[in-house]
Image (tube, rainbow, N blue to C red):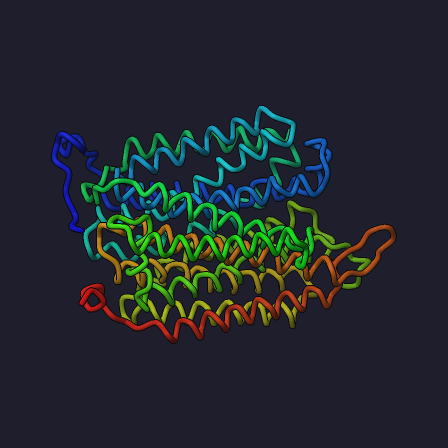
Length: 479
């Protein structure tokens, strides 16, 4: 398939906005942070969700889970649609879904509308791989590496800074204000796209693979529901085992179907190239390690001092203590690009994974004061920033230009699988290794040590997978 530049009748090249590289990077990075905020938007509400939505704790957990599911399912589809019909156009549709979902949640106080709204918010995560692809299409070659690094890091940055912001709003205003604020940010983001983001002339015209999209969605939903609900339903329950079996069978059938398609949703032959394959598998490990911090550090900070290890912080204080980690991710992105330019993105990914492991080892050894947890979180975040920023460079160097959005979408999907798996594993560890404090049941010190060591192991797996990545060019792989 060859790249095509649409003629004026299709993309109206004469009306494309003229935007400086700096403004384009700033605009798309802002969009990335806005959509990734949706990951932690409702974290401050978790203890109160059953009461707020008049439902059980199990049902209320879907307000969190459905966002992960929607983002995982829709991100690769969004990327493929961007390659086919225009990345700017699909980027706007992603933000529109976020706005509609936010308004739906803001106007509701019951479970089903809130779950539906949160699902629509999850769709917006597809904006990040689309933004990376737009940068590759629009920027001069010397700016692409650093720009993609910054854009890729926004997936972690938004989640990190979203926690204190959401906690402040939830503590001082009605909880619906969180969603009105999200809708306003989505509207502002859409205006920025209209003003500053041009439509890329690079297209891959083809019929949309509806069968491939349905198969991928079915397989992913079965897999991720099993992963995220396994601890609650029982890992050996008939429901969970059935979901895993359905996922495996559908994935096998979907793979055979995609290999037979002339214009597949996911080009498995390209995805099977060692450079792409091992980068994507490493992405699962890095995503796993990232979410370990997001789930365990806040609980450690907020645990009562009477536990003997807890630091007794409020949600706002815990969020503020972890906020520097988001800034570190963003600041290290250009550094990652420079390391990648000089030594190669493979080294950057390996170094980032090693720093993540070092951060968790520090957390296991030093968890007695807030500043110690801050140091550990900054190290983990720094490693994630380096690793996330290196991934697009590895992917982009191994896929055709007409498949950049789809390839980045698949990479973002792999990160989502990692975070979803981490959520299930860490929740199980923290829920089963507990101590009693009055009527409360809280994670024990050993539970946090176990969580940190599991995350360290994930970082070591990422290092091993990185070592297997061959540094070959797209032209080499195509031969």
